[in-house]
Length: 149
Image: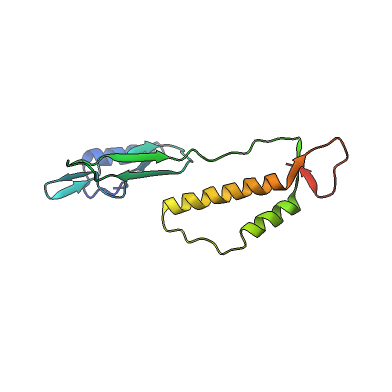
């Protein structure tokens, strides 16, 4: 199954077919959520559509039960810069600033958590570069190298 369940059954196949037909994504933990007699299965999952934010989902083996709780965390910390026509950015300075930050080798990505951390760092670097290379517009004529953002 798409959600790493070892057993296929009619209801799981119906859910999978429905998700495919309606363009839904099924997300589930990497480890099982239920432990039975000589069997494990993933019976806890989430269904999402067009969800662009990073998330983490995990089965937590902390209860003395045959069923683990599941933690689903969405990361909504991404900042989307607002458009401000009263700001001019020196794109040469922006490029120099960003190049100085990212002159190091690319990071090694080993998990979705590491990927999310690196995306957050890069997003912050972009916003910082823009802030450092921009200034409020004046009524004077545009200076060379400055263009509206």
